[in-house]
Image (cartoon, rainbow, N blue to C red):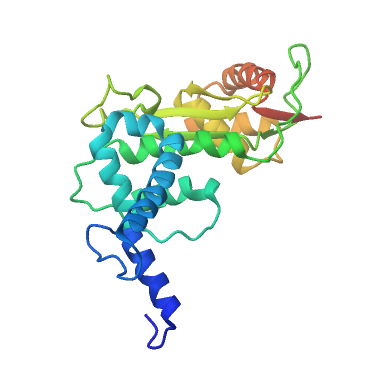
Amino acid sequence: MPEFLYDFQRTQVAFAAYIRDPEGVIPPNDVPCQRMAAYRDLFFNNIENFIATAFPVSKSVLGEEAWRSLIRDFYRGHHCKTPLFIEIAEEFLEYLSNERSEESVDPPFLLELAHYEWVELALAVSEEELPEAGNASGALILDDCVSLSPVAWPVAYGFPVHRIGPNFKPSAPDGTLTFLVVYRNQEDLVRFMELNQVSYRLLQSLDDSPGLTVREHLLMIAQELQHPEPDMVLEFGEELIRNLHLKGLIGLHG
C-alpha cells in the first residue's frame, strides 16, 4: 500500500480487502456492518453465479459446499487481468491451472473438465465466422485446399470429460486419451464429436497448416503412421473430410 493515501482511498482499500476476504479481514470501521454485509454477499454471489453458469458440470460434481469453498479461494486470491465479465471464466481456468493449491481435495479431473466447459463457452461467444457449408459428396476434393473452422477446436484429455457428471466421477485416468472436436454449428449451437487418434491428428494438421491440399495433409498423416498403403489413407481421409465439410467443421477452397 502507498505510504500516503487520502481518507477516502483508505476506506476504498479497506472496503475491497474485506469484500475479498470477509473471514480474514476486519471491515472498515466507518461503514455500517449491515451495509458491508450486503455488499459482501452481493459481490461474491455475482461472481459465483457467473462462474457457475460457465462451469455447471464442475459445480454439480463438486457439490455446493466444495464449490463455494473453491470460488471463495479464487475470489480471495486471484487478481483478474480483465474488467470484462465474459472473460472471468478464462480467469477462473487460469487460477485452476496455475494457482490452485496442490493440497486441495479437488477431484483429479477438475482441471480438464473445467477446460472442456470453458472451450464450449469460448466457442459460443466467439465472433469468428464458420466456413461456408457445402455438399462435397460428388466432387473431386483431394487437390482442394482445406482449412479448419475457427470455431472447431480439436482437444485431447486424459479423462473422458464429455461423460463426467454427478453419476460418473472417475478417480484416476485409465491411460486412454479422449480425443474430441468441439465446434459451433450452422445453427450457432456448440456440439462435440468424439474422434480417434488419426482423425484428431488430421484436424491438428489442418489447424497447423491451412494452406495445404487435402492430398498433402493425408499423405503427411500416412507418412507419420508409416502406413504401408498410403492410398488407403487417402480413401479413408477423403471420406472423413467430406463428412467434416458437411458439418461445417472445415472449409474447402478449390
